[in-house]
Length: 140
Image (cartoon, rainbow, N blue to C red; front, side, top):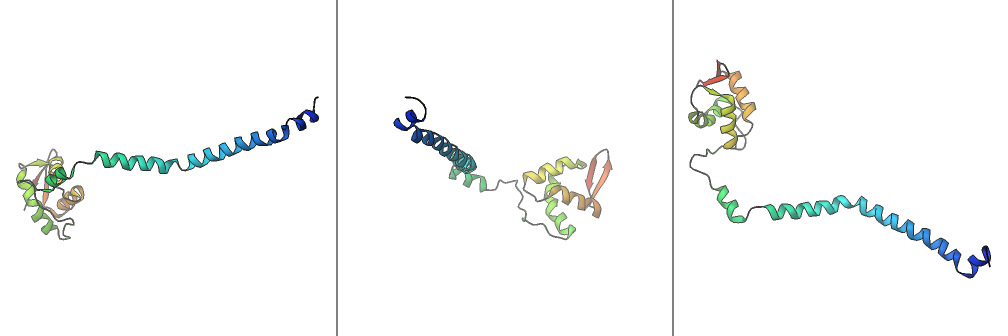
């Protein structure tokens, strides 16, 4: 027996239809998994962040201010002279004349907001004056 008779007698039509259906359903499932993969990766990233966070005890220690840390408001005043009064404590830590890089580093260490922009305003107001060769002095 050959041809269509053999296909009919041995359930060939059902196998011919079942094979492509299995392949197509597998491809559909694979495409759904790939399209949602970013959510799965995000879950693993969150778990990794949670495991790498320091213990609560060390967070409490980091919130305690050190003796030489300067308290600064989150938003500096609009008046440049008031801002200069806040920055005065930083300037006292630096030797005169100083490089702007040193001022930026000290401001970053003490969590001062926008030190580069603030230094620019100080220069415009004549509070921070260039001495030459990249050195600056504080006139206040």
